[in-house]
Length: 340
Image (cartoon, rainbow, N blue to C red; front, side, top):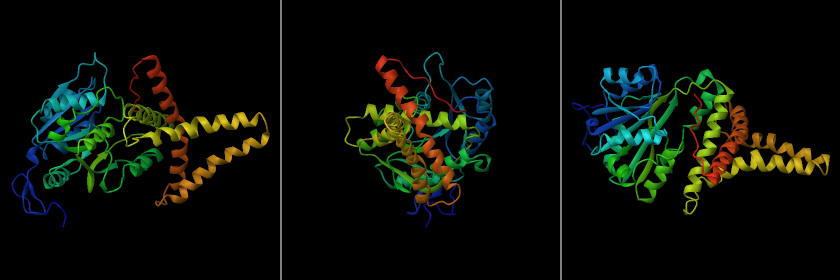
């Protein structure tokens, strides 16, 4: 049986054990800047499902804060004189609900699926040491571009215990507070980094088999895809560096792969080509790797394109890795890398 049944008590649901699941136990925190109508859809999807909605605005100029307040959300205006990160915004929202039992974090360009809050809440209530749950994030317009479709597949992570989740999650307030929330110094990768600290503290993290959010990536240009990949490389490098002494080897492999495909292999080919023209045959490693990934992909649609873009992404990812370490060595803070 589904954890939430068709029988609905006033203001909530019953879980599979017959206990009432009340979404009023949840405070939602949405973050955004200049999201326009996407933010309105986000807030409208949240307001009927939770007790409070807190919207954290990071310097919008399109009236987002005013429109959010008109809908009934509590608005927090970040001081933009300080360096902005999504982690800082999420922490600011959580600080407005210091005693909340459960917190639903969501990006302002996402709609929350009807019934997700009750479904996730039932899972958290059933297991006291379960700290975070996430469901299926889907792309609003996968037909708009290959980049949107790749994102949609990327978000379909395995069901069950997980090492990390993305920016949309339903979390136990006590667990978030125990680990000190998100790291405000990270420009990307703040959710997996916090999940790592949650796991070390003994909290469970799980992906549920349930629809959670609908995301509007609006990614139609290759430059956007490349910037997103560059941001991922930066996140891999920074988080793996911060936790380099940990036994998990967190994101070390994700950091090494772009350095191999995007830096080391091209340099090896160029160096060897100075000795023999046969070295250019090493370039075949790239189409062979694309074929390997495509043939292992269980989803037939776009499998070759996904494989090609996954490999091509190693070049901007490598740039992100290198940028992080260069700035680290000279003591400079990295700025945001946004693709929208």
